[in-house]
Image (cartoon, rainbow, N blue to C red):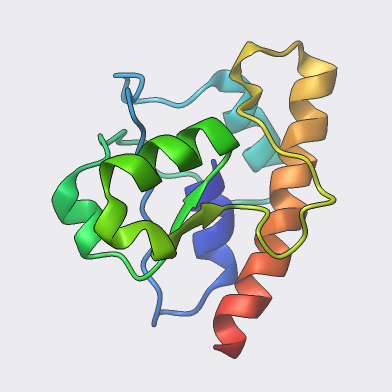
Length: 129
């Protein structure tokens, strides 16, 4: 979901990839995410979950995490790359994020709107640099 949103806001100089510690193995994302993205006008594409790997970390200029626990885990595991691993809401930490997967639909959608807002801020910062 974050991959679809952020990649749509960046130009072709950027490549956005989504990965997880233990990615949910399915060729489709959560139906609530699909609905949110479709209703928000995003072009949907095949969802291909990938595990976080040393190569992925090394070949990325920025690595963004939804939560502090994942941030700390990755910074610890990839300590030589820790300076490039940050929270998705790094540029506006007043917008709280979490993985919406375990929430009911109303809170799920609130988190999705927060992800959308954070991606708008992040895309502007990335395009400026």
